[in-house]
Image 1 (cartoon, rainbow, N blue to C red):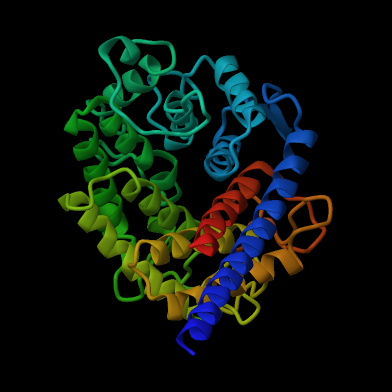
Image 2 (tube, rainbow, N blue to C red):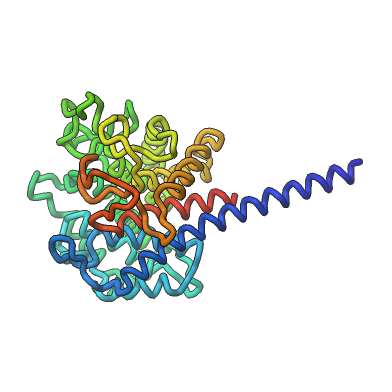
Amino acid sequence: MRRKLALLLCLSVLTLTAMAQTASDDVLGVARRVNNYFMQKYEDPTVPTNWKRVRPSSLWTRAVYYEGLMALQRIDPQQRYIDYATRWADFHQWTPRNGINTGDADDQCCAQTYIELFWTNAEGAIVPAKATPEQLASKQLKNVLANLDHQMVTPNPKNKELYGWWTWIDAIQMAMPLYVQAYVLTGEKKYLDHGMKMYRWSRNTLGGGVFNTKDGLWWRDADYVPPYVEPDGQQCYWSRGNGWVYAALVRCMDLLPQKSKEYKELKKDFLLMSQGLLKCQREDGFWNPSLTSTNYAMKETSGTALFLYGMAWGIQRGYLKADVYRPACDRAWKGMVTDAVHPDGFLGWMQGTGKDPSAGQPLSYTRIPDFEDYGTGCFLLGATEYCKLLKK
């Protein structure tokens, strides 16, 4: 009897393991399809974008795509991903958009991938590590660090605040992980300290503080802090804006020592956000463009993907209860695969660029947003972290 029970238990474990592997393979297959669509459509990564005006391909929208691509590389190492990203970085001379004197977070976002490419070893694995003095002076790193060094002594000319550069919450995702990367890369705490001070300025000072700890959600910038409300009287918590912050917290914590005070500070906000976000998920798995409002109540893919990214990460770390947050992740993935991902890999229900729920409306399954790249990056971040969750 005992031998039979042991055999049954063993078979059950093997079955569950096989099911988990099959499910994760399915997710990886969708991620590959979405990425292949993008890489085929934008075969030459050096070509500028041309929506209303020509912009270099190092702009923030494209930089977010590469964040997703590097996340995919972590679970699906392929030399073609590295070649594609390296060609892009070489073309832009491993320099923030608009040069080393820019203080705009959107210009700095591309440098996150420059550093991840530097950390990529011969086997294709991305291994964060401290660089040698010679490496810090290389073409891959010197302009990135020079840019941060310049910003750390330069007040924002618009508000005269040394730490007042991130005047919109999107900027937290565009640049805060870069400061943490620079800390890991150099071992110099000045980068982490400065990045945290800029984060706190946005969180607590901008517009009187744009993080509403009561709801666990962020107002996009000072213009949306109360008394501003949506037409139905609800707060305006923009989905993708909150997604940017949520993703930034994850990307920073991934690099920080868990016992550090900075990690604990960011983890506290991550948990508050997780609770707030869980409350406003739709039954179909998506989140609305305006998280708590009926204004523009519809599916939206970019915010949904970023929330999946953060929740899947939090479950794996043991910070979020699996029995509570795993169903939310499952619904989000099922919703996107069923209602947003096209057979060829195009992503529908994707909100275009902007700063609030009204941007790019009306959304639909077939509408092409003004830029496709950042949405693909958001999706890849969510898909890869969900794939890792399924394997556990």
